[in-house]
Length: 485
Image 1 (tube, helix red, strand yellow):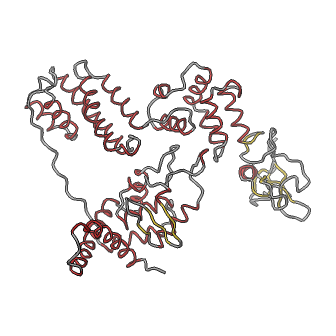
Image 2 (spheres, helix red, strand yellow; image 1 turned 120 degrees about the vertical axis):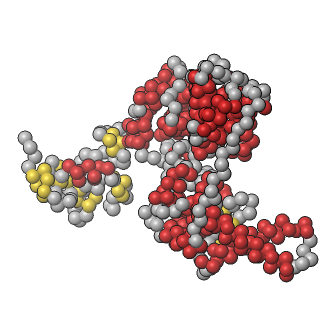
């Protein structure tokens, strides 16, 4: 029998009223909204569903209104994160017990995962939905029963991509798996997978080039970052690997090998592809290693210098970003670091909370070895960011990263920051080039004035003078547009 249409006591719209709450009948939409949004009861100060009217005519929870608690979890009595007859935390505990077994039989690494997830400051219902994904469910069940080892090799068997990467990073943060350079590990697997698809004579060449040329360069460049690479480098190296694999595959299709490749065949191929740099690197290494004859490569033409803004355009973007309330606060601050202090996005997203220091009313950020005092409008935004709840946090509380990302234990992606800034008309590369030009010109003027005023300054103090001049230049730039209070 269809429900009778009433005027909802909450939204005052005509709709079928199935539930008598808030002193009248309410519609299904309002009923669901009340269940999803518990709040602090003004009478008992407990977090509960406020769907009743007490004796004083105030909205309150069921208990304070003398009613039966229809929303309470049937296991623990909580009214937070409700899902069916249980709360989200009880659902999560039940799901983990189904996946991993009883407490007494859970292997210690998986017990770490259980503790990590059950104490995470997140909506437990989202964790339950994640655990229901087929590959997560299957992998954890088989780890719990011992059919699969609790090791990185098990995650390697999953389809590669962000989902498997998220799973691996979460297991590392939970101390279920040992820490490894995740992106570099994925890159090695990607190279091996592509090499396995090449003809027998060319597969070892791709692997050797990666092991002897690419990996040493990456280890040297990222030795201070746990030898893991950035997502941008990962993407570029993956594209370069594909280009080299296509080149080696094409050589095989021509009925020849890299050792027998002649100059005309190489020139023909390079004339018809855009990815010349990865091919040039491979051919150059093969020539030096005597795996190929003497072959000439053709360097990629040097691109044009990036366009720049005018100084007025730069400050227009700056003031617009200061008031861009529709943009995430973290992205606004990262954009301002680029616009005012010429910081690359990749450097800004890797700042940690230890790089920020508060000294009274001033706030400094160590972009490099020298802390820079932020102008007050930017400093105020950073104070708001530091005081806001973490985006994720997971079980470890506040992340060590200043700008926390979606991946467990990782910082915000520079690609995401670049996308959000470009959507607001800010081309970060152009802005950095403009600011670097302006800072360079101002620093040169200050150094010239310093040398003319102190001609007897010892030569070995030039580095110290330049560093102090750089700090003064940044203060000069920011004070000109953001005067001190």
